[in-house]
Every structure is written in structure tokens, then in C-alpha cells.
Image 1 (cartoon, one colour):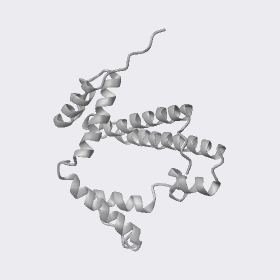
Image 2: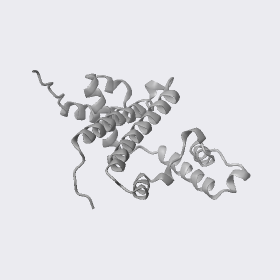
Image 3: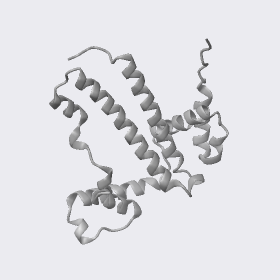
Length: 189
């Protein structure tokens, strides 16, 4: 196993892409809030696909480096998990529609129910819909969301915006995160 560290230029490029992805993910979360009722469909799709594309760019950048360094093609394909790739142009798939029907509390047709994957996705959607009726108590989820909102508020220097669209508990957590972050001082030459 190769124990050499990632080259610094590649590391910085990957860090930049991951930071951009995090901002897109935070936008996805922001557009799920009540204040964004008018734009949520368009913007959650834009930002979630932007995040996916940006992470794909990071993966391809790393893959190109590995290929250039002589990694065998079969190893690279295994690491890239190429069997998991699905094109968005082919979606939404039947299983996606079954999951959404479960979320919405709608039944599947007899034909749709014949596919085991549809039944499973529908059931998962129903479970998710039931859980959505309960308050979110998963500390890691709450903390992650608060960190994303707090980071965005700090970067935009608009901590007051947190109170405009977040539930009070989330706004308080995000504000604490934002206040804990210090903006880096730019070096002067």
C-alpha cells in the first residue's frame, strides 16, 4: 500500500471543491425552510445537483491523479465504485417514484407493487413520513445542520438572518457555531 501523502496542490483543490459542496448542501437545507416556499423546488434541485457535480469533480480530479501515477484501471474502477453510477438524465426511476408515493401516503398500483424494489422503497418512504411527524431528536443531524447554517451565516456576515428562517432552537445552535468561528485575517504584503 502506498503511504505517500496527497500532493499539496491536489489537496488544496480537493479542499476547495469540498468547501463549495458544503455551501451547496447548506443551500439545499436553507431552501427547505418556510421562508423559501416559492423557490424550494427549483433551488433544492439546482443546489443538490451542484453539490453532486462538485463532489464528482473532486473524485475525477483524484482519479486522474491516481491514473497518472500508474494505478491499474481495475483498481481505479473499484475505488470509484463505478457500478453505483446512475445518470440523472434517466431519473427519477421507478423506485424513486415508489419512495415518493410512500412519503406522500399514496398507494402503489398493482403493477408497481409487483417489483420487490418498489415495495421496499415505498415502505421506506412510509417509515420516513411517519418519522417526519416526530420532532427531530437525532443530535448528530441537528448539530450538522446547525454547523452548516452557522458557517454560511459567518461567511456572509449575516448572523441575524438565522432568526428569519430557522426554528428558534436551530437558530440558537447555528448562532453559537457562527459566533465560535473567526473569520481569517487576510495576509497583507
